Length: 138
Ligand code: ZN
Image 1 (cartoon, rainbow, N blue to C red):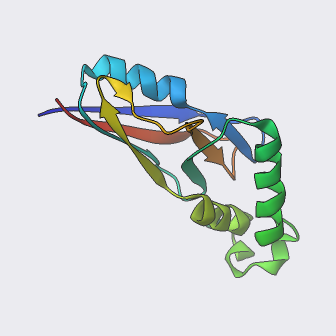
Image 2 (spheres, rainbow, N blue to C red; image 1 turned 45 degrees about the horizontal axis):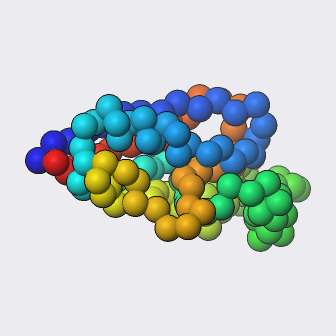
């Protein structure tokens, strides 16, 4: 069995952002030389997500609106966590959108369903944060 590990770094200009990281994950897969197995992609921070969905800007705006209804950023004073921080909403948004994804690797390809793409979801950005890519297989 082979294994491969890489960290992808991000520093978004906005507090909240969705980034399609499928090309980077695909590059990791090629570098790994693994053709059958699994790839795990997870956010290494508790205010960011990795998730799979459609790369469609209207949908991403819908996510932003939906998440703001569920866990509005402001007023910061509405959250107990914000006595020493201002990112309680980001923790909750991450919880909803998830920590990680696992994708099967078949014949050297990410074995996606129709329209599936991998996204990094940033909810408390403007600083350097990491995503772990771990691939195991042969
Ligand atoms: Zn916090």
